[in-house]
Amino acid sequence: EAQVTQNPRYLITVTGKKLTVTCSQNMNHEYMSWYRQDPGLGLRQIYYSMNVEVTDKGDVPEGYKVSRKEKRNFPLILESPSPNQTSLYFCASSLSRGTNNEQFFGPGTRLTVL
Amino acid sequence: GDSVTQMEGPVTLSEEAFLTINCTYTATGYPSLFWYVQYPGEGLQLLLKATKADDKGSNKGFEATYRKETTSFHLEKGSVQVSDSAVYFCALSWNFNKFYFGSGTKLNVKP
Image 1 (cartoon, chains in turn blue, yellow):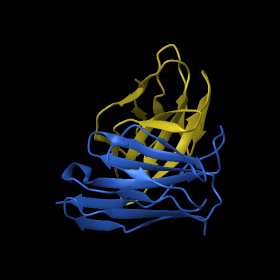
Image 2 (cartoon, helix red, strand yellow):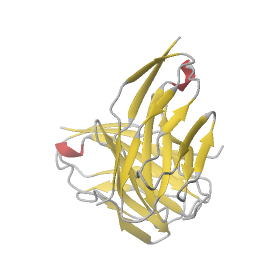
Image 3 (cartoon, chains in turn purple, yellow):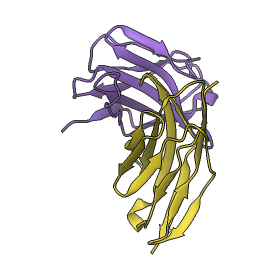
Image 4 (cartoon, chains in turn yellow, blue):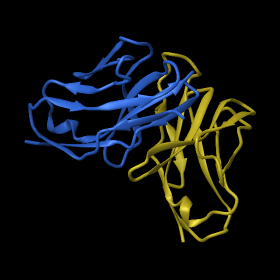
């Protein structure tokens, strides 16, 4: 089944404890992206990647890191999480940049930073 | 900077009512425009899109027309169903790289 998977789905952690949220897609998609969803703010793009080893900042990259060493994986790294990073995070992928390419979203990761 | 503004919800309608969810955007130029839908506990799914002015996107009875004169992309459906209850997001994108989403509008459809 074609899908985008994220792990973990739920995470409660404490301020300053490094964490990684994994994202993997099995559709051989070139483009991947991370978003955070907050009440009243909709989705805001954190980082995106157009292909292996090619990443760029979205609208709210501060406090996050990403890497794209393999086409299928795009982990989101929080080196020193803070309470303002408590949010619902979504990973998405699409075949490539282009007018007919739909973004497929993962199921989301709910992160709480105490 | 670029942004998307949606009408605040929730919007509550009876089954078979007409739906309009307003969306306006701010951008220099002509981005691609999208509507995404999010069902409870799930990620977003693309509902429809339009890539140039005057284009009409349509899917599952929903429609939206790209209006550059009014910088709008309002979502409409002639007869909503209970199964349409979800959160709807308007979004814009440049070159399908950077995406900007609105705050979402929750739709509740009552039987």
